Length: 255
Image (tube, rainbow, N blue to C red):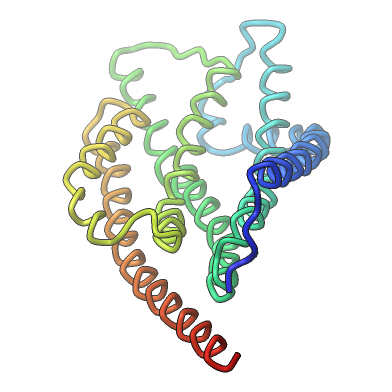
């Protein structure tokens, strides 16, 4: 059965309470991020890609900016499971009991997909892009002088979007459960979705065909997987609604 109806004021109060919890833990995790940022930055500078380049600070504030940026990113990543849980807790009273259990299981799946996207972009795509860029510089006899801020900015711009894009299946599964989209709708807009994904791939990769395909093909595959998952979630949601309505009808009859 769904939870009791809440007034608008109660919804706003509940939402504010959850925002306060999120901001509190975000501040705590950012503080922890200041301790974790240094070993992480040093580790990333010892990789093969970073060793091929000499990282320089063109401004006195560049190392500090990188340090603070990593602290905030670590804080955001550590807070993300809590954000997902607070989102689930906010909307769960409007879901059936079975839907609450199913949607709660999406949180660990979402985290795994995020880490998978980061791993794919860092271990597969990023080395390829760095190698491609350095080969162009060598062919043009250009001596690259890389700033530490620019290097990590490029690294984050290439890896973090993949962590978010790999959330596509679980997001589709979630909003299908909420009844916001259907698998029929997703199949109908497939060609438009492909176009958007191609544009996104072009924005986060260098202007080179192979790297663009390395990004766009997995995204298209994820979209097709999302449609399949949406079909399964849609059938399960329809089944859950019918079961809950039948149970509610039997209870009314018994009364």
